[in-house]
Length: 346
Image (tube, rainbow, N blue to C red):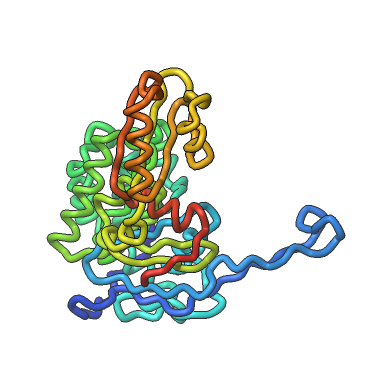
């Protein structure tokens, strides 16, 4: 559901290339709870969970800033605090000059929010969901209809305008919710997994719409996603969260430099890997195995040796395909968040 409230957006504080959003020392702890389901084997109450553990972030005006991290890293808790839906235990959040800890209600007038689950509009048609969001955000009836028509046309949703969201496919429904989030322009967009379930045409429409708002209006975008391959093409900067902390923050290129000494080698075997060959058996413990596909992240010298062993010896007859690639943002995500290493470059 897109965040909305009556009234117009508070005046944004112009700070040029400074921070549109500044987070300092953000902490949120969930109690361990009580009862048999929350107790350990010896009857002790479950420990409290610190979902955010002293997060510091600066999101600049007009940039697309990404939040990446494994499940349980604290991304959802962080977003709920940034959108005024959850009060932190400690720390500060300033958005366009407004203190969202003291005045969480102001978030709704500054942010267009698309959450992971948007069920509030399920009974409404695509057109009515977009129009209702505009009215909730202070537009009069005529302006809300105009904004509705413009965004549905922009995203190619005109043919679906009269259909209830609950009768759409997953990707279509997600695109309709994104459309509603855009109505009643907000200076900041917070998008949590916005393209889940979408086909390539719909994904392209989403990012084109985001780029137009950034180019024309200077909109700032905070993106939460697991789709690191897609994120690499749209993000200006990214923070990696793990266990409630920011363990790395930089441009995608800067983060890739953290694992620049590694390359990714993909081996696809025709039937099965020839483990009887010593060179291949030595690679097996280093590989992430998925069926016939092996993925190895190796130092450059070791990767060159592995390619020579695979392609220049008897293993070549068992090989169906192979690729050798420099590190991607996916490799950084796996190395930092996915494997829990506490490297940092903030």
